[in-house]
Image (cartoon, rainbow, N blue to C red; front, side):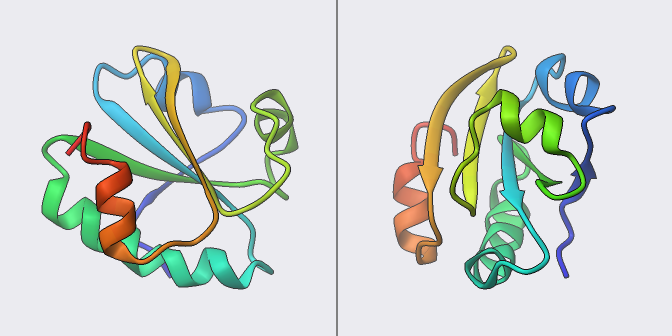
Length: 107
């Protein structure tokens, strides 16, 4: 479905919070149509801007602890982490140009 690395409740701290890179976490679920629609767009952004931002995915159904901690109530939810802190939140599926605009500060 996506080329993005999957992270979990168990790996979230090491993969995202402790990373020196800027990380975009795609909070998604298997049953979510808009999540499936945005996945190939995120893959394109990762391919074009992977040197500046790393994109990972967290399945909210399989990892409720992290989803609850970050108050994920609507998916897809994209959160950008830098230095262990959320620096940007994007809710909902958007076209590539709109996502790139939202992420301009990081890519």
